[in-house]
Length: 167
Picture 1 (tube, rainbow, N blue to C red):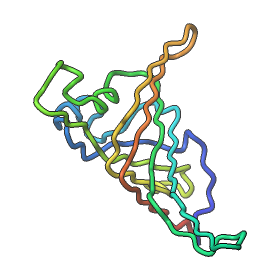
Picture 2: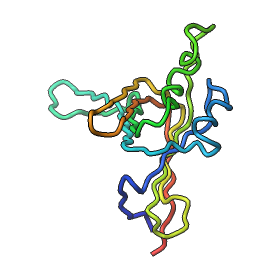
Picture 3: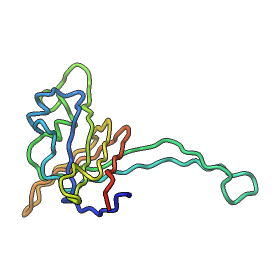
Picture 4: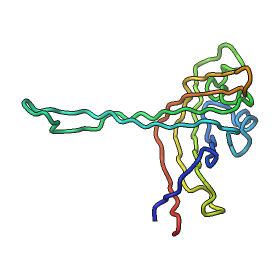
């Protein structure tokens, strides 16, 4: 049986793992051993495929559609806790001005959706986004609300695992 559960934002969690370009000690200092990103407020993921159309002379409808490049991107927002996500974007440039060679940190991101139906499952749907690199960071400090940060990212590929839900 397919997974037919509906989800709310509170049903999901976000974890980061397998960092490349940042020290493991610095990573675990900000995110702990689990890599969980606390107080996530907004996560979106978009996949777009370029589709090339070929029209033969005299036809109004395309005679062939071909898939082109695939782009994976998204947004992560959370209540501002510390500079951990900014450090994931800038790597060693957060603590120093210049260093030999620009190595932008990349990592894997897991979006785990679980509304506890059935109870005790790890997650009914797990989206793993591989090779994530943050490319834009924004910090908002409203007058009468929580300080929020918002980051956009690009990724190499993704995988989806849907756990079968019994009837």
